[in-house]
Amino acid sequence: MMPEVPEDEHRRVPPKITAVSVWALTQTLGPILLVSALAIWGALHFVRSAPPRTITISSGPAGSTFATVAERYTKILARSGITLKVIESAGSIENLARLSDRKSPVDIALVQAGLSEGGETADLVSLGSMFYQPVTIFYRGRKPLTRLSDFRSQRIAIGPEGSGTRDLALALLRANEIVPQGPTSLSSLEGDAAREALLRKEVDAIFLTGDSASPTTVRAMLHADGIQLFDFPQADAYVRRFPYLNKLVVPPGAFDLGENLPPTEVYLLAPTVELVAHSNLHPAIVDLLVEAAFEVHGHATLLQSAGQFPNPAIHTWPLDPEAARYYKSGDKTFTYRYLPFWLASLVSRAVVVLVPIFVVLIPGLRYLPQLYRWRIDSRIHHRYAELMAVEREALHALTDERKAVLLKRLREMERSIISRKMPGSHAEQVYLLRQHIGFVRERLSQSGAADDEHASA
Image 1 (cartoon, one colour):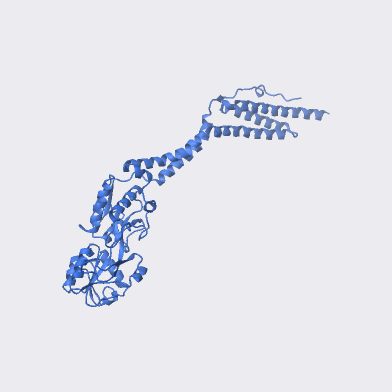
Image 2 (cartoon, rainbow, N blue to C red):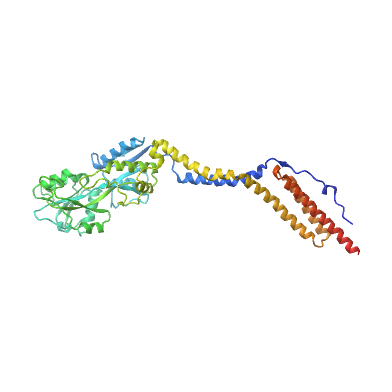
């Protein structure tokens, strides 16, 4: 005898079907929006904000080459609406100290290569070498000297404490075993004071670099009676030992064609001057600075050929990646090439946001209906898997208690299907699933009746 089935067991309650299941749609759309948001966030993370309108450079003493270069940079950057604030300094040593000071407002500075500064320089990068700054040594004597060790026990002016000239002079002298507090007298005279002291025979040799060794000054010293320009016949060896130095060849007559001064070829040593910046300098500003450097330093001079500077191959600090890209491509990025600076900056940042939208979000939305349909289908297929498991169990002999548990599971399954919102496009699948649930329920009932007849027999 079949067990009595409650009246509500056969009741068919129409499922609550809506045009769109908001929750299911949200679950489907959520991953697409999440991936798009992550893509946009990642793009914004690697792109900079708008470039600053004002940056600060530490230049050099008033009237110096460093100061002149900074003034020319100022005029060039002003064309793009960038204000370059110039702060005077004593030279390379102070410039590097300012860059190394995290509290300093300085963003960029001209620094002589090879300086040994004890401050924090890990944050600094090079935008390339801008020009040579040769070291010229004048000495008094009739006999030419060929080694710096020949100046041992003499009086040498090497510049004041904290100057780039003194730092370089001490490095070269130490390589020849001439050190402070030794038999050689090292004074802090520089520039005009050092030249006058040499002419008055108060010192025996002087080291000059930068503005103190301008072509005019060198020409005047070469004309002075008893004064000679030191030649570095060992220049190649010095360059090997000091990688930041370069060998320069001065041809005869370079400083005075009429008097043929120098009378023979002379070798000089020269570090370069680099434009050094903090590593977080805005890429757009880097482009402007390198472009300005080409305009200022790209011409030929007595000691360099046209196009030799700025030079990315000669640098003490790591080369800035944006500067490296500019040197490699030879031009600014596309937007900065054809648009005004500030408009180009806005477009560049907008593109970073739009690219993930076009690459991720829009294709994702295109496949949203398929993804949504797949998600609904997967739910229905999951119910079919549960239903098949119940039917497989119904093939075996069941106790009344186990049969009641399976019937209860079918009721809960049907109730879950009815209560869950489904789109109208899946109504046919829902009703078909309910028919199959009824089919399995009947199998369970028939299984019970068959068992009773078999027991009676």
